[in-house]
Length: 164
Image 1 (tube, helix red, strand yellow):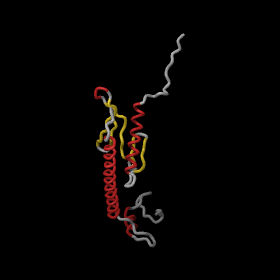
Image 2 (cartoon, rainbow, N blue to C red):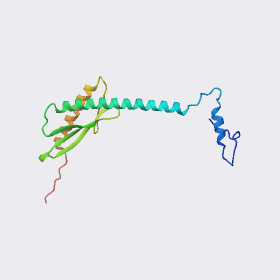
Image 3 (spheres, rainbow, N blue to C red):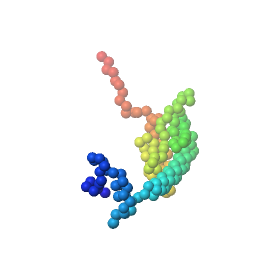
Image 4 (cartoon, rainbow, N blue to C red):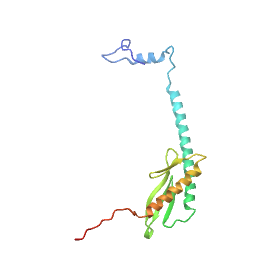
């Protein structure tokens, strides 16, 4: 609503009397919607946040269930020198080196869009219909990462020193 400076009472140069706004806000305008009261706005905002909290909790539950299913698939067969560990909301993929040393290769997490993510690799969205495909895809990506990690770079350039 544009302010009409000509109608506003002024107390000092450039200042408007606060009572003017109180009177103006109490007057209903013809053809305009009634103003939103703070109590209404608070109730709407609280309900929205409650709904978001419930949705977030549900998403976390679903994500955790999918991560548990993935962990079961990854640990179903023994993979020498590799360990998979579920902690909080991620599965860590660890390479076991000599003398109990572990190298963390990466981790599976569920992103806010409800996809499984491992570094640059992303699966399709997790839905009631797709969760099994998502787990299959994650197992395949994990196998690729393991093979990539275990395989030395065959095409890496070798330094050749010319002998005179």
